[in-house]
Amino acid sequence: MALTPLTMLQARVAQALYDAFGPTVRLPKVLVQPTRDPRHGDYTCAAAMALARTFGRPPDELALRLAAVLDVTGVCEAPEVVAPGFVNLRLRDSWLGERVGSLVGDDTLGLAPASKPAHLVIDYSGPNVAKEMHVGHLRSTIIGDCLANVAEHRGDTVERVSHIGDWGTQFGMLIAHLDEVAPGAGAGEPIAIDDVADFYRQASARFGADPTFAEAARRRVVDLQSGEPRAGAAWRSLVELSAAENRVVYDQLGVGGLVERGESTYQPQLAGVVADLEAAGLVVVDDGARCVFVPGFTNTEETPPLIVQKADGGYNYATTDLAALRSRIEGAPIAWPT
Figure 1 (cartoon, rainbow, N blue to C red):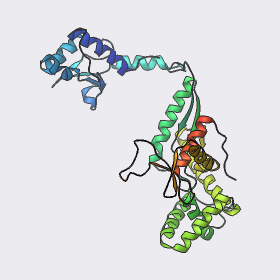
Figure 2 (cartoon, rainbow, N blue to C red; figure 1 turned 90 degrees about the vertical axis):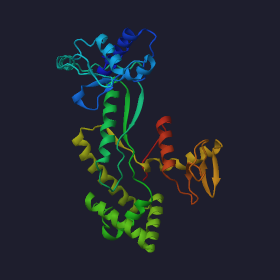
Figure 3 (cartoon, helix red, strand yellow; figure 1 turned 180 degrees about the vertical axis):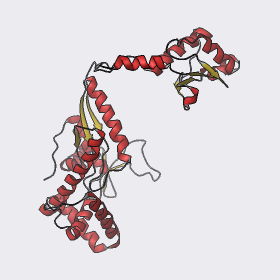
Figure 4 (cartoon, one colour; figure 1 turned 90 degrees about the horizontal axis):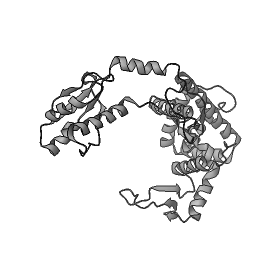
């Protein structure tokens, strides 16, 4: 694979430092880095300032010595020394044009195949069900897709996964509210994501202000977890609606092959995760909760960093994440709840 401009310039600067100051010169950890201001070129070297104390000379004098022997012919314009001791480098347009031209028509884009192809799981945005995607989800989606595309191009096997939030107390709350305001949501009656977002806010407000509704919401959580048909149907309608809305965004971004694998996927495995941790002697019961104490990791109140089962028997995000991690590593079977 062809060297990047930064890698190439780092090698040339290192050679120039040896040429200018001798083979025993101690190279700074950072030789070349991109400039913060394009008016100062594309890359800059501050090695002269790092060496000024070693040699007892002004950094601008050392920068001039470095620039005089630095060979960037054909790649950069002539090096520019700027006070107090920077050597700035600007890539030549002709060199950049040649590099781009050499990649046109090259299916590999200069990327060498992996010597040992890997099996990778790459996480994407992980939006929550019953909520609209927002701008914060774009960054991880774009980064994840870029990494996945490069890995596949190298010959790696890639699983593109979005670990969506589709389980928990909030769905009992939302389903209880839908029972009243949109009872047909789980029976094929169309519902818009904008309406669901409003319903979610309304349900959240009611949950905090109305004890009767809060108790109904908790009962619907139990119904959902036990497979009660109407609760399950309402939940599936929310999952399917959110998936369809998310797909619109992914299609606009050109993201393909993405599997939405939510927290619900791992619910059947949670009890087994806790049981295995107990069998390994890693669980301590603290105030009724099952906790894993990791040496060196405590918060300011000296409480454990990882609670895998709450005192009421429920599980939390940490348990789900452990189940997801084990599933990915061991290839454990997974299935959506029915």
